[in-house]
Length: 340
Ligand SMILES: [Zn+2]
Image (cartoon, rainbow, N blue to C red):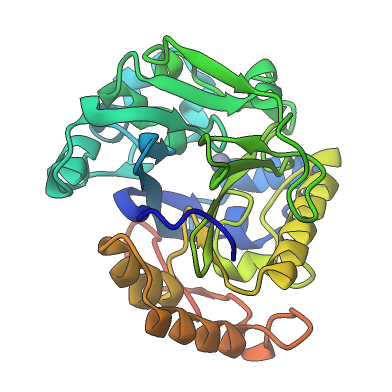
């Protein structure tokens, strides 16, 4: 891919984990739709999975440190009931989030030699709690988010579950709204340049939330797609076989965004997908080790291609033996696993 020749590093940050119903991730084609999805979301307390929460740190030689998403903060995880006082968050479990001291954003940044105040800009793919909670460690840092996302803060999933908990956004005192007026990018009719050289771009991928966006980083010999929750995991690319839960027109919008990302991958075969919550070997064996050092080597990228071929057919469907299935582990809190 064409792009800058200056060294750009992209680190994956693991900022805790979250407990979700299996159907939230994988039930879209099996009845987790609309009111039924809401009912099951609120009542299915027997099929949980725990998935990691990832953010990404882009080190750009001219534009400094750009943090894409911020994970969760200590209070969300350990003082849940107090943090979400007075909220419709009774839907969510007290132990929804897992975070130990070594996974707090300042500790993770320190291991890379940075302090929170070194971050020049935060880019938010969307305003869900597990993406904005870490703003608490970054008061006053400039925040970039799509205008559609910001202006639809009142939007509620299923008309009921609020997207935004305003106190989590309080530290964002300087917000830049992206209008996607930097021109087309490949098959995307609109994009928003996040760096002056156009190497880091925001792309509109609505559906998961009204103004969800992805970030693409164009390096000299490959590209990275920070997918946020447009793709919970790599397998969600096969949206004819696996879909997250959802409701209403957002489902079709979300699927259209995934198809657009699929087409982008076809145009840019060296593009690597970085989901926010992948919990499979794709994460633990490939993305995690590779991006811990800020750069995927050619050999690591070749291994990722072979892994993708073991997951998807040539026409992008999920191989039959790769369909995610819930695995009961017999734990008292009903946290199970997912087949790979
Ligand atoms: Zn989300």
